[in-house]
Amino acid sequence: MPYELRTGKPLRGDGPLTGNRAAGMDKLGEECGIVGIFNFDTSRDVAKSLYYCLYALQHRGQESAGIATTDGHRTHFHKEMGLVHEAFNEEILKGLKGSIGIGHVRYSTTGDSKVTNAQPLAVRYRGGSITLAHNGNLVNAAELRDRLEENGVVFQTTIDSEVIVNLIARFSSEGIVKAIERTMEMVRGAYTLVVMTEDSLIGIRDPYGLRPLCLGKMEDGCVLASESCALDIIGAEFVRDVEPGEIVTIDKAGLRSKRVQPKCRKASCIFEYIYFARPDSVLDGTSVYEARKNAGRILAEEHPVEADLVIAVPDTSVPAAVGYAEASGIPFGEGLIKNRYVGRTFIQPEQELRETAVRLKLNPLRYNVSGKRIVMIDDSIVRGTTSRQIVNSLKMAGAREVHLRISSPPVTHSCYFGIDTPDREQLIGARKTPEQIAEAIGADSLGYLSVDGLVRSVGKPAEQLCLACFTGDYPMDVPKTGNKKVFECRQ
Image 1 (cartoon, rainbow, N blue to C red):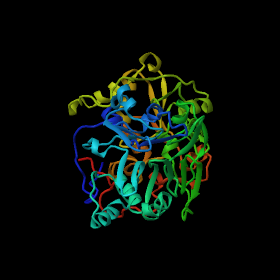
Image 2 (image 1 turned 180 degrees about the vertical axis):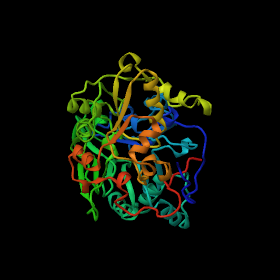
Image 3 (image 1 turned 90 degrees about the vertical axis):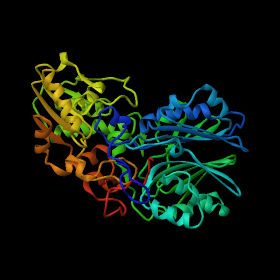
């Protein structure tokens, strides 16, 4: 649940839902997706390429989409609520002139929202303008905002991204890279940024590397994006990941890099590999698809069961289900059909018909599951409500047994770094044992992947990953009292 930036109070309890929650899916809320393109050929506009990249990153946010471009003299903007194809058309894209540009898709969450909180954000100052798109969340945003307001800064939005862009503008007389360094010294939390000036594109990744950012090259330019799948869609070649604490500057002179010496350990978000990133992306040298498939293999070792069919809760759980099937020798098949035409929002059913929301999204394939012992693979359980409904629907379709296997450990702690998680008391993994959860959702058995197994699946040392949602070991200080704050207002 979102909380007001200054007070930490919940914005609302009920109301319109969007994204996964609108479709009845009990998943963690998405993050955001960012992209930036610099064309060395100033006659070539980047708007369409940005549009396609945002399409590839649509899974990271479905609330709003925005693009900003510059022709070296003027900044051109367009941002709207909704999906990428809803926010843009051919005419709009033609009006976004310029060979440098950045784009943003904003994640979906509960609470009211409006276009003023959509990104990219721009600040004008005496030396020009700075335009920014941000993925992540600051844990000291309220404190920094208070300081800026005391010094006369007037904010147009209620999001922490505006704190960042105003800090950069405040220090801009020292040069843009130095201003970013000064800002990085002040902000705490998770962030990847693409920053656009009249003549440059800059990419920044926080010193922990919590959020992903990669660098690609085209024939006439460079691309920065949250995931490598955005490079693929425009035919850009993946070069490398931006390192934690790195500032990458691209201008007519070429590409330069500066590393802000990190005073902390690398802590990449583990949920990128479990759920958020597209399976065809490569993050920090690891194939997301292979990591999920490995998780399924290890899950089969840790929680074997006699069964007739392995199925996945589509789509993110499919690689893990394939891995489980291969390791266990149990055939993999389809058991749940996903309605791919359920929109971002639809009319919510009455409380007594709440399960309709799940059936609109997923429906059992009766012919495949009837009379069989089913292993159902999912990537996570948050509140448990959707898992209960899916298990019940499979048994109503004739499944003899349903054994639920989760390709991650129990989610027991809230995230403060840009993932919209419920407060801890709403996390079923924090309140119940696996046996109690299995009983509550009607499964014949339940097995979670261990933390060690998850780390093995990714192939990175545990100390280079943020596992806080499973362990409570946060890589930095987080609010100790009161409600979980994401420092973002939706009203």
